[in-house]
Figure 1: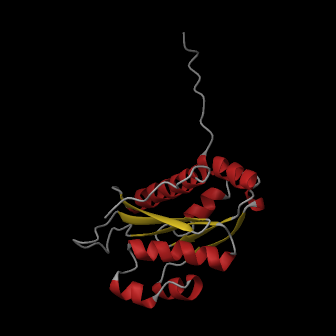
Figure 2: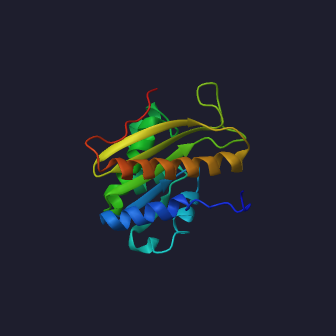
Figure 3: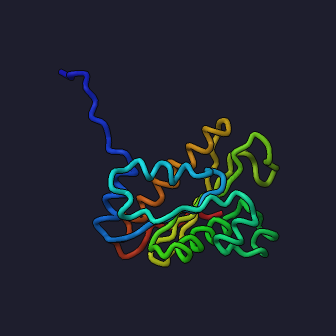
Length: 177
């Protein structure tokens, strides 16, 4: 018979912090649509200061270029919400912060800003780990805050999966467009 008590799963940010410490890796974040929520969630984990070096909130294209080295051509040709921009954001964050890992988010949280090609809820999440970058394309429903929070959960899940896959021969691969 059940006692009615539920075993709570450890929050993902604690798992990430523990793995980063164990593997002696550092992480940074590069955020656009999540506006600092990924960093804010990571710092909920005890001891994260040992492995989390810094974060970048690059909401404007100018900030993406200046702080992360995202190519102007990428932004002109692909747009701020694109697989290539998410990739360049993650890779730029690793270079800038001198870490081995980074996660990036860029998307359209709404309620405005969407188009037929790039609807509200479209988010690209990049993750760079030890020089290998994957990008995940996501579609989230809900209002602005819901989309942003779903993007944070997915970004942390991608980072977690890449950290776990790091022990195998081949990292988890990204989705296809």
